[in-house]
Image (cartoon, rainbow, N blue to C red; front, side, top):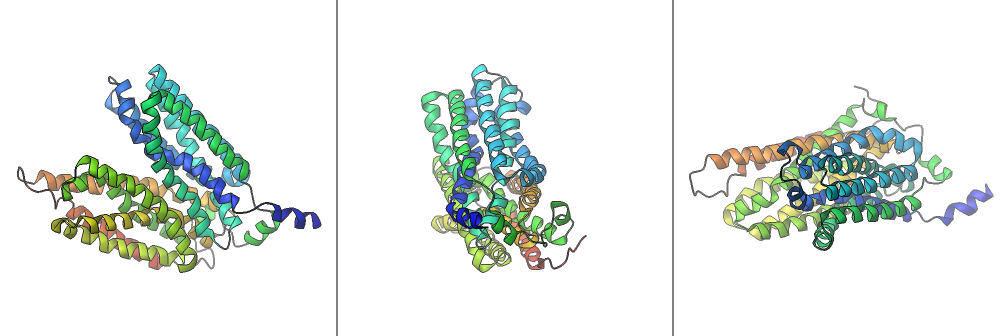
Length: 420
């Protein structure tokens, strides 16, 4: 007992969010892989469209991110965050190295295997690895703690977007991918060396008989309400994200370069919103935070067409950035919501399953925006203004957001296991 009393205070719990950020800022770079598209495509001009390395590799990485997060959660809970972080670092780092070798040898299957399959699995394990540890170390500030980590994922895309271009200009795309693989491995291993389970006393205080397993949690109505809430919030944000540059060009007549500058700023607000809104949820409550998301975003989505018609660019930018703080905030707040609802013991496994809402939204959101706007564009007379081609898709997404508010209002604490 005296040994526990002496050793417990030695480790500073605020190092755990730092470790999580080191891991997430590396795997978050996957969202900047679009900067590799043209250089990689130039290496494989004769590959069929269905196996074009830049696109099939990125899509495969995201699919495996979701699958490994969903199915790897119980393993992460059993083996602990350090083992999971080491595996993630090994997979993600080696995946990039393998992919870079494939680029150097001009072997597209090797690029697909390394960056798509191996790297994608590393992303998924790394995304969920710190979550349950954070909520156990910070039972008093779960939102803030997970927000800091998941902020790293959003920030990683912003930093990598610039680093990728900088190094490709000097090293070439193959050497850049290999070098980044080595660098990310070392940074993630630093995070793995820091991260750890909380002491037994803290674990006993936070892990109680009220904890549900993953299989028990997914049989409750509350889980599926939360799944729907995340799905709606991501659908709205990712729908605009998929068409952000064309929207600004069509609605406000911005150049591609001007639109690209705003898109780069989006990632900052996305990352900042993850920390800000998750921290707010510690005080306002998780349900109230999501209610704020849906009310404000509904108003903004219905207002944007009018802003475009009046050419109010500055107000549109403010609206756009606000939406993306809430897009990121939705990702960062959900782990704390799950821990509140189902207990912290198995939140990593439960979080992995709920991320399938992200995968589904990544399909639905862009389809709504691109298909409806394309139909409206096809119906225009030659030379007609494109300002209003996004009116209908934005209205459809606003209806989704209202549905999200309804789902949020239906969420109630889990008193007894309310099975379906």
